[in-house]
Length: 150
Image 1 (tube, rainbow, N blue to C red):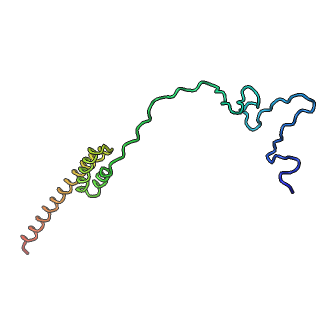
Image 2 (image 1 turned 180 degrees about the vertical axis):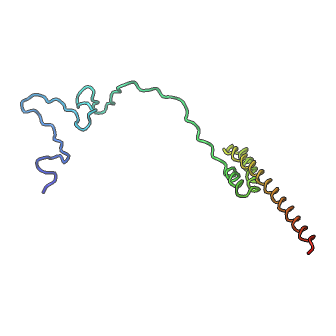
Image 3 (image 1 turned 135 degrees about the vertical axis):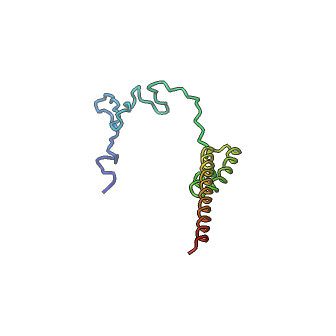
């Protein structure tokens, strides 16, 4: 078997245009696979080497610049907020470091650093207060145990 088959020289089923045996020129046929394309040789169809005609006027170029990409968030600011819930004194350290770095580099995350600092101070204060209360309870318990006689 030979490829392409002898009856159709084009494997995709397109037959080359043959001249009309009666001497009349053939009208160009539109592309059956692209209903939006004009028939070859018609005034609407671009010739080889020509640009296609624009159906409407081209829009003028807008000189508006693109928005700047968002500034990177400071890593210390993120760590400050995270460590406010894990180990509050470390959140205070990271928060102050982040504030200093943000001031120098102009990175984002100033709000995160502030939130980490505030929460770090609050949780550290609550932790110190809780330790003081436990200490007082422990001292009172020892005094009660030593002063009681059987």
